Each structure stands twice: as C-alpha cells, then as structure tokens.
Length: 283
Length: 319
Ligand SMILES: [Zn+2]
Image (cartoon, rainbow over all chains, first blue to last red; front, side, top):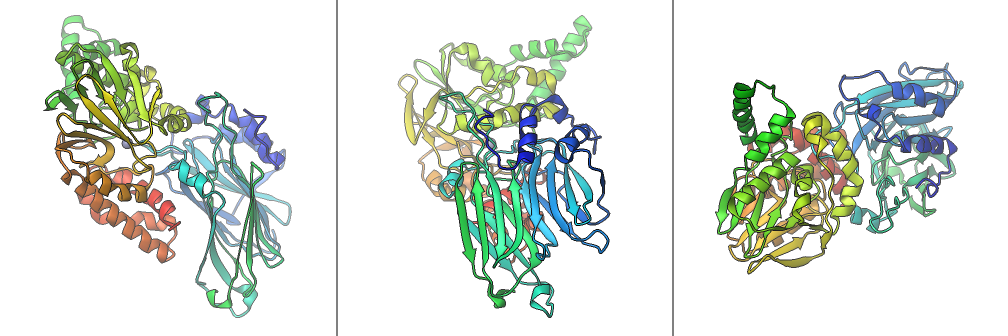
C-alpha cells in the first residue's frame, strides 16, 4: 500500500510512512484525561524538526479549536499570527494533529510581504489529540502552541460524507472576498479577508478496494500556491489530515487591482488553477 | 429506562440470589440468550422493536435504533441487527419466538453502528447480508474507526464480539426480494442521511421501513447530504405506505406525517446556515447559533445539532 503513495515533501512523507502503520495502535486511543501527556509528540518531534529546540509561542502564533470535535471529519482550526521586531516575520507554520495516521496536516509558507495575520482551515481529527502549530520566524527560531481536541461522540467518523459528489466536482475552486474590517490609508496596509475552497475528496487512502483487496492509494491536495500578481501570499504542502474539500480563510495585505491566482496539485499529478480579479471596490 | 437495563437488573438479581456470582459477562450473556428483544407486532407478519432515544452505551447495549423483521411463507427478512451482538442475539430470540422459518436476508439500512453492530449475531443463520451499493465502501473507510471509537462508551465486553460484516448482496436503484409469497421492495437512495441509505417496503401490509431517512423525536443526524435529504423528502413522502417504522422514533408511525418534524428542522437549519454564509460569518461562530430555536422539539439536540450545522455549513458553502 505504501509504494503507491508519493509525496513531494520528504518531511511529510517520512511522518506519513512512520505513522500509517500505527494508525490504530492502542496508544493513540488513550482517551481518559482531559489533556494527557503527549508521548506521541515526544517521539514525533524529532521526526519532524530533528534536534532543533522549540520554544513556547508567546503569542507569536495562537491556535483555537473546539474542545470537542463535533464532527471528526471537519474540525475548524483558527491560527492567529503576530510578528514582533525581535523575532521578525513568520516564514512557515507547521500544523500537526498528534494522533492522526499522518500527523503533519500541512506546512504553510508565507510570502515576504504577504502580511498574513489569520488563517483558518478544517482538519480531520481521528482521536483525542493535541493539535499544534509550530511557527518558524525570521530569526530561525521555532515557536509552538497547542490545544487539545476531544474526539466526537456518536457515529461521526473522519471520512468523506458524500464520496460521489466530491469526485464529480474534483478541482473546482471558489474564492470569496470579505469586506475589509480596517480601512487603512495605503493600499498595502489594508488587510483583506479571503476564503479559498477547493473541491477534492482529500482521501486518506485507508480504504480497501473490494475486488483487489489492495488499499486505494491516498488521493489528496499536496501542493497549493496562492499569489497576487507576482507576489506569493502563501503556499501549502498538505496531507490527508486536511478535511475533504480543503478550505482556507485568511487575512493578508492585498494590492487592489491585481488578480489573485491559485494553483493546486494533487497526489495523482492533477493540476488545478483559477484566477480572480481583485477590484479595489472589493477591498 | 431501556428494557435492556430492566432485563439486566432482573436477571442478574436472580443470579446473585441463587449463585452469588457478581454481575459478569457470563451472567449477561446468559440473560441475553434467555430474553428476546421485546418486539411489537406492527402488521400481519411484521414486527419491530423501538430503540431508546439515547447515545449507545454499555448500559443500553447499543439498543437505540429501531430494528425489525418480516415473516414470509418460506423465510424471514431482518431489517437491521442493532447496536451490539447482544442486541442481535436478542433479536434472533424474538424471531424464534414467532417462527422457526430460516432468516434468509439481513438487510442493513445504512452504515451506522447502532444499525449493524449486531450483524455478527447472524453469522450462523446463513442469512445473506444486503445493503446499498455504497455500503461496503463506507464501511471500509469507517469500520476500524467505529470499532475503536465506541469502545469507550460501550466497554470492552460488548465490543469484543462486534465485527464489521459488510453486505454481499448490493442494491442499486430498486430491487425486489421474495421471502415466500411476500414481496419486499428495497430502494437505494442518493446521499441523504448517509450516502448508503436503503429503505424496505412490504407490499403485503404497506409497512415502510425507512432506516434513518426518517427520524422522530431523536434529532436527525446528517452524515451524507442535507440538500440530498431535503430533495428526496418529496420522493419519500410520495411512497404509498400505510405506516412507517422510522429509524428512530415511535413504532409504528403515521405516514407520511412522520416526515414533518425533520423537514421543519432541515428548513430551519438550512436557512440559518445560508444566512450566516451570506453574511460572511465564519463556520465556528455560525454553528453555535444555527437552529437553536428547534432545541425544545428534539431529544439529543445538544449532542448532534452543532455537528449537523458543521456538515450543513460545509455543504451549503458550495451553493
Ligand atoms: Zn444512522
């Protein structure tokens, strides 16, 4: 089953390979304490960040998630970013769900002048798990914050609700622009809020084909680039922990008049792209 | 109080008195095989048990949904096996109390554990397991998760015997089964409650087993498509049934009035979520207030409404 899964990002690949097999190990289901010790994280940390020291976020990055995952397939996560002069801007943010089969949900990279201050997305959460965000700032330091999410009760599972629908509309994108909250004076200082939606099953690959008895290869969005004009807003290298129909709502410094362009690619090598004009009036 | 609890108290009480053994699994198993599920005759040859509107727990042995069976001249068709092997065995006990004809079909109305965790109880009956053509796929991506995630609420003893048993006879569109001078029409629906909903109509008596396409009293849960469900309510409503055995709620229930409450809830939920999306309200905030005015009308509202709102939000955003 593993040979068919190809990942561009070796980091995600290592973690995916290491944890696929132990997806349902008993340790992943220790569900007693409110926020248990994360033994998973202590072993995961080295795989993802090596020996590098990770310090507390101290507000540079903060994370919000519901305490209980009402729907294991769609757990909304909010990340807020704050930069200070000492640490410099945030270069990347790694989003991790400790107890998932593939814990590294995504690695986001932000453009130099993108000014991203908020990013919301939706995750699959397989078990009672810490969800953590690790920011790498310009000073080269790693800063981490985390929150604990309890798995849902009832029959909610981290799986696709409507498989046929997801495949039928594969790659379709939608971009929404929300009116600006703050009206700055200079075009580059105005934060614009956008929401990008991509139709994709973001399939976990944990399903078995009835006839062949082989696992169906994972099929998910692995690369995403959002840009405005020639400027990178953010890119993402993603995994299967991002919910079906990946969804990103974010605030950034928009330049009025330049098109917003999105390019995405999935594990089957399919490329999806779309472009939207961003009129001054919409900012 | 569910009948399971009552049964346990009674039987283990006797056990205690005569043997002095503690309330063990053996005692439980003994009481189960001795005590058939208290089914109700719905119509001539049609029997059903009404599950309790509750979450599945060790105490209620997963007996939270409606299950039933139809007796033909040659054989029996069972509709759903219940939320544990203990319930499945009690259902077999109830069948055996009415007839000695063989169980030919075990029909699963959809993928949820409360409806099919009892499948393994039917292993030795030789029954063919029947389901929607999407059911095997749904169980492949959820089966292992279900077995793990219900362990906490149901306990190791009940979970030990539970197996995911997928159907081998698959229904696409519509198909009739004959159990001996008795025609049952099985219909595979497009995504609604789940993407593998199946209904069973008994032509002889006009009883419709809706599976979880119809919820009464217990808040409906959306694990397929809200829009698909709403769209198919009219088709469902058009089925000329005398009365229904809903997936959850009174057995039997008047038809098609049984659909009214869930239709109203779906309309309220969809309109609240649509308004939030139009106003740019983020999902996290929108799902907290959506459909709250329906709260007093349902059991398990707090357990499931927010989850329904999340599913609805993710779906309606694409309109
Ligand atoms: Zn159900």
